[in-house]
Length: 241
Ligand code: NDP
Image 1 (cartoon, rainbow, N blue to C red):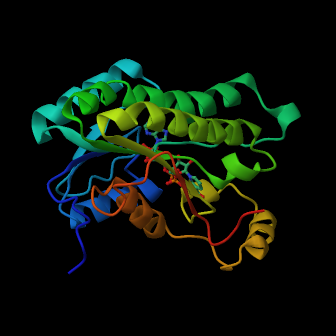
Image 2: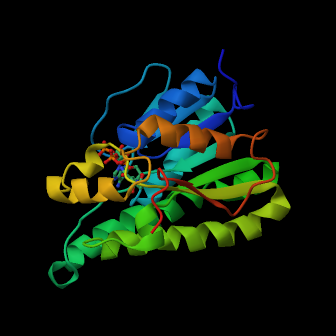
């Protein structure tokens, strides 16, 4: 039997849970006995036993409704995984305002839209654990990703600030900074660039979504990470510089 991390019967909302890392955490949380709700934008591959809600994280009103629906159906939300994110890569001189806005609106404002309806409720209940999705690109930068890296670096500042505010209410806020993980997000990266990246990773392979999911479960856990807040957990195969 796998350990439940104290997450059994806890209600957890995952944004962007239809594919990739989000789908892996949804699946793991189900195995751990959590009550799982997730959002997606367009691609629904509903996992049995979950509450799947079409809602764009860039739509503040829709995200407020999500909180209401999840709490009505499953109960008070204990955990949030602010996972939904996109890339629109290009060299800076070619980066259009639309590509800048889409990435910042989704990866940064989307986290605000997700959390703002729930955080006050968590404060009142003096219970909650939030995991925000950053990236290795937000820590070290990456060619072709000025927009994405800016949004993911901002998530680190956001997480550390909210963690300090939320601590007095016994709510924890942490970030995950995955390295390069095998999901659809890697598809647009040219093969030559992938080989270059692989040569820089001490573990000599890309990560699996499940490997990120376990780290998220750890940070959500009221047992395993109860004294951890405001931290950034790197899940990157040793790929730092
Ligand atoms: P995928 O592209 O595989 O999946 C993205 C998920 O986010 C999908 O479920 C998608 O829904 C959803 N999504 C995208 N935009 C929105 C939106 N506006 N509203 C709601 N849902 C949305 O990405 P990954 O699983 O690879 O990435 C997940 C997170 O991890 C992202 O924040 C990403 O930046 C981060 N990350 C990923 C890394 C990687 O190498 N893969 C590395 C570091 C960080 P739909 O299916 O409907 O489109």
